Amino acid sequence: MAALVYASRAPDCPFEIVLVASNDPEAQGLEFARAEGIATFGHSHKGMMRVEFDAILDAEIRKAGAEYVALAGYMRLLSPEFVSGWAGRMLNIHPSLLPKYKGLHTHERALEAGDTHGGCSVHVVTAELDDGPVLGQTRVAILPGDTADTLAARVLIAEHQLYARTLADYVRRGVSIDRHELHFQ
Image 1 (cartoon, rainbow, N blue to C red):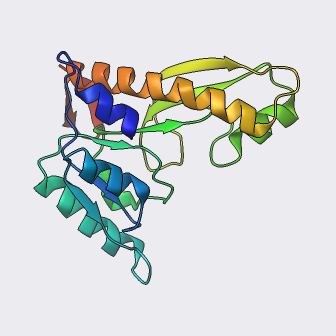
Image 2: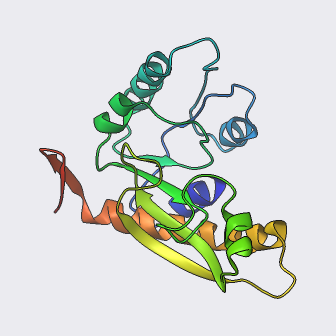
């Protein structure tokens, strides 16, 4: 999220961050955003139905005037209603070379499989976990002696660069939604 905030400050960046939201009111990202002068919304999902919480989240995002949603560190599955409401306008970063290793423990799985590369992918969010169209990827070599932590640290560097660049390209192209199909302008 911080990488997106700092990228948004470049004079030629086509996006701005209008809200940082979290399902954890104590999330460090909210403190960071407030310090950077960005509006925040933090609300616990505990004790709420997923669709109920997502409706509150959706209302706050729309109230902030957002045209796109960029997930960054959001580790909670979103309701189909939320996802469909942002169809074609919500992106996510995932720490693997999708379609490989959807879900959690991606670095461990790449190492166990004996892969020569890990990496990261930016994709359009759909109702299926880590399954939307891939917009960009960066391969990261797996070095002899790598652990999940050492690989994750290098992949994180790639994520910070890839996400900002891919989001900017996506926003520049413009997206309109027609019958759940993506159309680029």
